[in-house]
Structure formats: structure tokens, C-alpha cells
Image 1 (cartoon, rainbow, N blue to C red):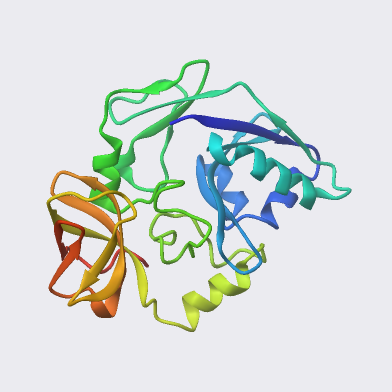
Image 2: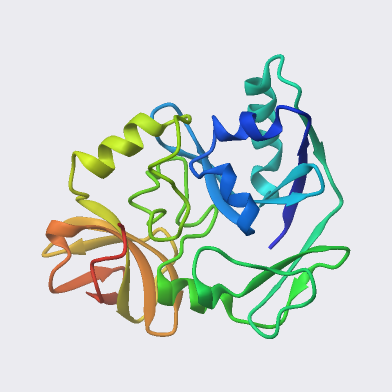
Length: 248
């Protein structure tokens, strides 16, 4: 759970982010905002949380993506009055009684709260179990450079806004929303057995998707919906579709 928190400051900071990220920066007035940066082709680069602190906007991202994200943001800022600085803030999270200053995770109420300060860690909650139960993708596992965010459930997770202005990748994302029916996406499945993350899933001998995070008798899978009926296989594990409304 190693995270990096950047401070994005300057008179143009809010306008700068509004033109780049998938969510509406105006929502920062209400608390923590979940969003992503996409390629012009609409594919995932990074997902992150945004929040206000004083006159600056803070950006919380998986540490493995931090250097590349900072590089890309710097490339986009051109002559704008924007400063991007890595802070020493750390993340604590939990699902019990919120600590003072904690903010609600906007992806799902069961994901609890996030608190930024001098301490790192969590309250012992099994967050993988919660993610699997609610089909919430994780950076670097379900979310990869090949991901389209609507297939990953970003609308359901409050990570994209279709009423804000343009942002990088907006045209492709809007087209997927309004002009197509999703044929593939992340769903929760029942699993009997276990298989490594990334194991191909087959149905009737045909490729049907990929297996990801597993917890107990549930797992997150990326599936082709037209092949997701009935029994499926992933290595030695047997899968059954739990419900098919997770991608939207």
C-alpha cells in the first residue's frame, strides 16, 4: 500500500487538472475525489485520489506510478502557473470509526476512510476482500495500461464525470458510454479452487477473459460477456459468473 502524495499548487492548478483528469475537480469542495489520467486513446495511465489542503490540491497515487505520473503532468503544464511537488504525507485507512480529519473513500461506502498525515498503515481491514466483494479494481492488478476505465467500472466507482468539459481521453470514453454497449469488463465471479493472478479464463474451450484478485470463494475477473455464461475454467479453478452489472 505504498503511496506517494503530490502537492499541485499555483494559480492555474485547478484549471490544469480539470483539463486532464476523468472527474470534475469542482467536486473537491465536497471531499475526496477519485479520478484517472488517460492516454489520448482513452486507455489507463494512473488512478488516484485528489483532495484540497489549503490553496493546493493534493494527489495520492500508487508509488509505483508516481514518477511517470509526475513526468506526464509536468509535460502537460507547459507555461501554466503550476507547481508539482512530492510531499512526505503518508496514508492511513480503515473502516472503523474515522480518525479526525479522515475523508470517506468515494468509490464505495464499505471502503471506509483515508487519512493523510505522518503515519502509514491501516486498521487491519481485509481490503482485498472488500475489493473483490464490490468489484473494485486495484492499481497494477486489474488496472493496467490496456484498461478502458468504463470496463473497469469507473462510472459505478464515482471516478468519471460525463458532464464536465474535455479531458485527455474524453472522446473515446464518452463514445464508449453513449454509442456502444460494453462487451467486456470486470465482474465478480464465484471461484472453486485458486489460480495465479493473470491466469487465462476459458469457457467451452474458448478464451473468455483473465482472472485477477481472489478472496475466499470470490474473485475479480475480466470477461467477455458473451462467453461468461455457465461454468468457466482458470487453470485448475472453476468459475461461475456472480453478476454481470459491474462494468457500468
